Image 1 (cartoon, rainbow, N blue to C red):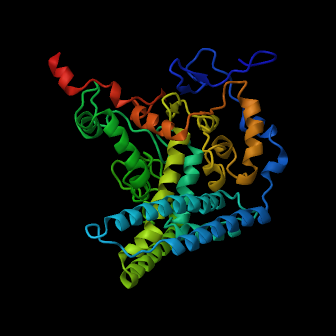
Image 2: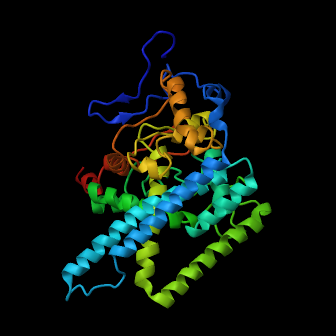
Length: 423
């Protein structure tokens, strides 16, 4: 497949022009997967070189943009809340202005969030102590328990698209979504989907993912893995990022987990004091609005880079590290690539070599694409990300089980209860 002088195997399109991954591990002619070393060999060696100068430069650039935007906003917007009945025009201007600020400030601050994430991977500099110092500081401003998430995110990379031992955005089974073995709608999402309808349920999926998903994940209520650190099923245990006794973590990390949690609590206390001293509205406008948009971006990236009806997920007997890493998808994000250090458009390379600094990922992606695409192993979905998000919200709801090779199914394809009764 794609060898020698033959035409390269490109990402295929269905008849309705919806992107589909070119790799199907169930196909008889599925290509042999390369090793990590073979893929690394096609990337220029300089791509793996970390630079204190460039890492600090991009950090300073992002923080300077944030500072400049705060100053510019302070010159044109006030946190004095107009009375909606007495000053409807002023109130509408207030809402529009601060919504604009929240979106773009959240967009800008996703850059430092990504850099702190790179610190956790060891991609910021050659010194992990320095990486942790920078990453810890940046993430505390964004209420992220740095060491706790560093550990669980590393597991996400180690077990990408593993149905049992994966971490974050692990596909729910049909039983998790309230379907019986015969696809009868019994509880939870299955019943909710029928009551809401296709479009409303998709919108609900997007809203819950983007604006509730991150805090729920940190608290252990959504999207966690199925196994604890000891390799045993969680079986209903809450796997949060804040308790040193959480089954997510080995005992040796207790001190770091306590430190991360204590500083997050201190940051929350500081925000609480500011709300007490200056009122809730200014703090909501300046901090909480952008905070939720930053969270939305980071969840969006993780969701879209690993989810599509044509992307396989693997049970214990089928999963390998290379299979998982190559199940990642690159997508175009336009101007947002500038703010977010191309984390969404170079995500395949990032999962293959997380220690590579982000500012070299573009060159590496070009080399990896040239190597993998002719083999039918490179996933690039050119769909506008908003449309891709909508499609995934409508089509990726559950898998049949946690064994073998599984693909997402949609609740839209499950018979409605009222139609079953007619039969």
